[in-house]
Image 1 (spheres, one colour):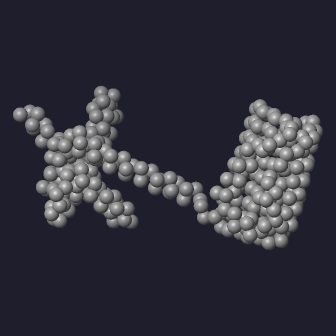
Image 2 (spheres, one colour):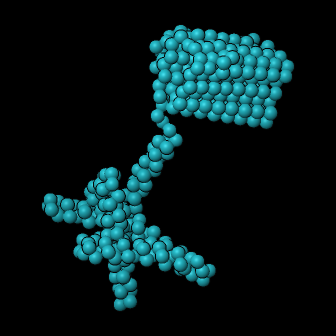
Image 3 (cartoon, rainbow, N blue to C red):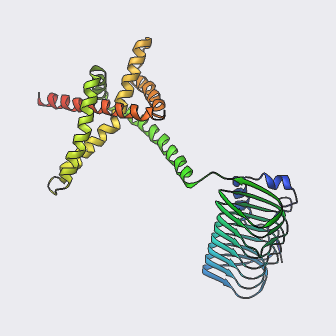
Length: 349
């Protein structure tokens, strides 16, 4: 007995739709189609190693560390680390795994997703593949259209319909009725850059929350350091630079000895706290100066937010932003050192 693995509307011959399908659309289709549809009968297999050595005239759903189909089946849905299809499939194939290898003919449609996908045999109808690397060998004949999205694609077979490829690297030595190739510039470096940008945004939000909490929990010490930022900026910059370098050197030297390790940890913790709060103090000072110049009657937390937004925008200016960040860190850290010294004198008194 069979069941409709694919909707006939989805894979009806419509070249414009297939041509402009994007990678997110492909992933959505794969996820939807991996859900079992209504069936009359099916066979399920699971385990670390799933090996089908007997012909099964039914629909197969298999999942395991390794799935090997060594006998003819009616249709197949498989998921696993390694999937090998070594026997003919009468209907359709949906497979997702680390490596997916098709070594036997499939009469219906094929949807594959994985790290490495290799097609070594013919497919009766459409092919949809999303993977890290895709190889279509010389022995492959696709009866209709093929849509492939991967970082690297090698095509040496025959596609009787339209071949649509989206990849960074495309090697074509095969034939097709019409080829549409889109170079995908999304590389690992760009992906990491996007993740890093998101992390910086979240970190900036966390810094804003930290500044507001500091103003709310300890307003007097915080505003005392902020006032010091505006009083003697040049002295604060030089003091902050010396304090940062001296703290790092002293902490490393003490950490080399077992006796000085606890003290080194304390010094590095104070240094880290000063570095985190340094730009927050400067943000409040900038907001205070702007409010005074414009005659605004604002609260301390409002001044902080004004200065914080201005600094965050300035820090993202190419090259100049790094210089501004270094100056603000030294300025705020110098004021932080003087603030600690002032607290020590008050405690002694």
